Length: 281
Image 1 (spheres, rainbow, N blue to C red):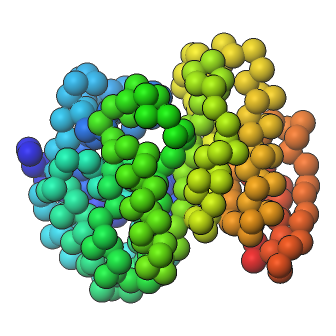
Image 2: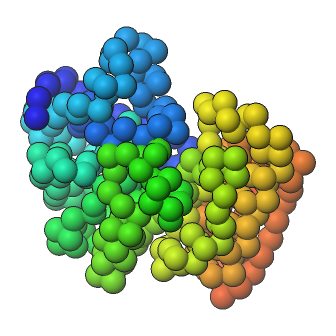
């Protein structure tokens, strides 16, 4: 695997549910074809020439050295570090990436910095030996393997993803699910309720629409569809005491109304300024 060097690693993210993040790999072998926002931006700014180049990941070889310098300086500002927003920390089939990710998480945890992980790869059971403050998540937009092979050709199967997530959940870790970018029915016909029930053990669910895709914008009822699906997520989470977050732009203004719910000391709180929903405890 080719390695590169960088001067910086940790940075404050603009993603609405994130704090600090790190991306210690350039490119991603999972090759998502939603399309992938990270690839689109890298191509737009001339950092990568083609999709074929993007799916040949390059590991930042001096990641740990950078962290040694940045952690002491940034620690007072950091609430958590997410791995990752523009690549995958547990890229399927790349042990070099997995090993670097585990080393980075261990280093951050040693400095009492919580890590949040999101992957379409395999969450290694070694994570169970890390800080109990860490949160581990997977992307799960379907249970159909043929669809997965079409839009996430290099990623691990949904079944394996779920099994690894459940294993960490059973070890007492907080686990979460990212159902984003969720496809419209012209891309695949499926029941979101089945996906939700399959991962009902998770502690948090994030739901968001598919963007940057012409097929979605051409789907006649896409706004109503996402309103309906987002509210299905909200109802499911409230009924099962699961934290949730509906990504900005998923619900339309017409359905963006204040909602309250109380069950087992949990209640849904509408965050008016940004128009998304969170579950507060």
